Length: 313
Image: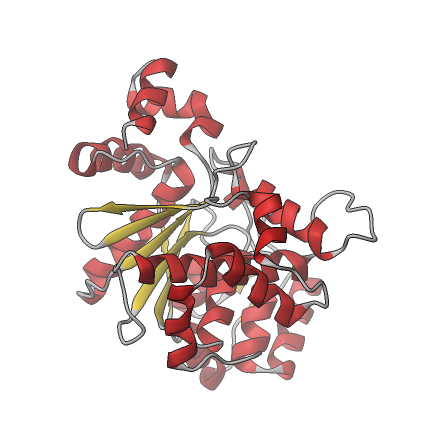
């Protein structure tokens, strides 16, 4: 992976979001993208930063037609492969590259807004089901972004928590069905990237064997320390999600969607356990409107009132 020195990280502040995203994608692909290319796909302001209480900054990544981050990923993936019809979801590496590039773009916006600096550590919080989001932050940290801890919020499918905090993962487990279906994975897709990146080829081969046999994966002791370094996971129940959303609105006047509430619950657990109050960037990939029916039940408000409260932020 390419590495950015501190002066190069600081230089992100002087470029547009689109330019920073294009620069990172051009490191991984030969697409020769420009800021204009990126803006034609996602617009000039595809992300918005929202400051909350307690040193939490939400990066809204869902300002697209379908109100989810998935549309941005798909649009940029198509730009990377203009000679191929993109049928279904983007390839794993295309999605990962876009996620890494967006993190660099978001970090440039944080620098402009004075929320952080290249000398300051920053925690990053995600909802976790697929491991692509947390893994993009792991890669970005390897590339020089000053990220301290990658915080992962799991729903009742807590396989990642089991691995990071107990040192084992039931590879043959069946995922539970919940109200946050994108997080319904017993074994998080792309977790093998973390195992390979942190522990090496032999360890990921052992993980693959466990997945094939439906066995319990338990990393070697020396690999376990490398695997969980700079990583944290928490299990956030459905009931807790339904408590977090109205509570955050009362204290910060901000409406989290259920997936962002998973991430928020995990970051509060991290602070409670570690005493670490480092500024945390929370990545929000879904508009509350995209999950309107559940949000109306949680907030006990009408659809019109939900839209009004979102627009008032």
